[in-house]
Length: 483
Image (cartoon, rainbow, N blue to C red; front, top):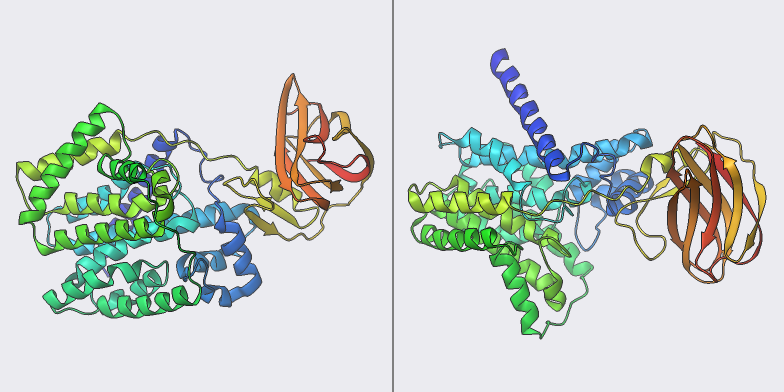
């Protein structure tokens, strides 16, 4: 074994991961993004599924198809302390970029710039016009894994039988193998190499089976032409509206059309995968096409097309001024994209502390207006004593304590209340002239409420409150916890 070469590979990998972390920090203008990275199905489906079903969770379909990769990461992570879950899931997400780096380096191995492409293109993709919906979360790794799958489908001659285990994992994560199978079949026939095609075809058959067994609801075609024009504008201008993005977009599409006419099959295959992914997204969201935007609803549907355009452009073998214009234009578009909004702080660590008192449904982003929303179910060893107090609800407000939790940086509330109708219940903390609130939505009836949030050190006045007519008046038993 070449020890020096192995050390160099590890060093290069470490530098790549550090670069990805720095790019994320630059996009979020913050270093605190991992703790807030849990998202939606990370809890309801993957964490809870791993704990409930064990190995069977790997083959449990969701939304009509298998998600083996995120379920595998969730299963491996399930023995970890709850506070480590955001970091374990984030590691699972970032491994999709390591996979992309490997796929690019192999697919374009004959290029003298292969290693540079494999290093910088994945990092560049993090600057694409995007809301951040698919960033950080294990739930959305499938969109990034699909980029590597498209690259492999477009270059089957570069991948041998050793890549089959990776391909199996990729094809059983999301429905994208169905989309890229035709491109892979054509390229496999051209190159007479079939190690990539076989697992893609088998994966496509499996995913198609699950899709037919649990079909997604179909939407009626949106008849409003203006909505379609808005969507087309978001594609052509990459969601941008300023003059610089407009000029760069026109330059990119003109130069790309010229390159397509004289490019080699590999480039055309990657562009075809981008077009197919976009067409599938249009079909999936055809009833509400006008709301789709790289910066808004459905931003995940733009990730694969935009990413594959970047991969095709920067790896193209056609040299000359036209390619230079395409690369520069796309770089301008990406680096001119809107700043990402920081993730919502859902007080995950505080709810983890609360779970030490009883089994807790920990809320996850995005915040849902309907109960129970997205959550992670944390079991409890009941490591803390339960001492409850009686409080009185008057006009939808219950005063809890005055000048309480002086030395605590967080506070939690456990209690049973009656809701006359569904609505928000809020833990309100008044301290130093400011108010901190943690709100969750609950259905009508007798409900177990669990609320937790951070606070500043110092005494605070605490109360439970709700919209008028939500909390029933009368006595309640609740436990206020200074953490």
